[in-house]
Image (cartoon, helix red, strand yellow):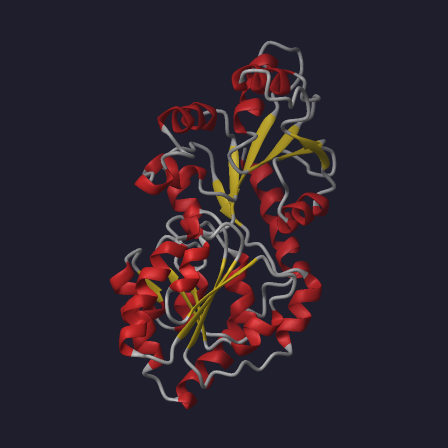
Length: 343
């Protein structure tokens, strides 16, 4: 039986999310970048992976963030098998779409997650002893590839923003949709096409897309505002009447928690981990990854009277209350300790 107080834990990260960083700190883990050595691109990728894996320092337990560190830590485990020391444990924090892509890679994402990448992750997943997933959706997908036990601990809203969002009372009268995110997996192109259908039915509707990397030409669509990266989301949450997360594959996007905390009714796809939270607003707030179905959901919401919108806003505040740092870090630490005892 493992004892966290006596185990050395190394958090092997890629680019640590604030929640994951706090999780690692809650168990007093040391920190290590999976790509610490020979970062320069003149070296072949596999050489860098092997060197970085071989040079990871010796620890009892490795907490690996997402898919990037899996191969180096698998190499570390293989190199340590014949050493006269107790076997090291690899606990994966299932926090990105690695396992979702291994099950099914959408055509739009095959450039990033090709067959060789998925094969390498499938190989490395055999060296995972146990895992903590950031959502039930992430857990269910990973169970296809991970033999060890998997527990669930959710991320949180950062403390300062949590307090600011808690005091908001958004203006729900207008038909304004908001979404936050960058990258193909966020499905903003799907939302754009859905909004075009909505705009045909509701001429005064507007869509605010926040996040970098989106085509400027999207601004040419009537009612669409591509805002790029913004430093403060509060004014947008305060003006929005609906938040939509149209992701193709998303384990637990905190932006959709933030919208709930702001009191903005929130809609997500069935490939988004926060669906387990959002569904408490009603099953109609979980849509398929399909522009027509998303458009239908938005139109149904826009058809609601202000009184009903306000009731949903109040409910959003209630169901998002637990996603604070103290509560979620306590949950993570408890799940991590229990997992060590299982493996």
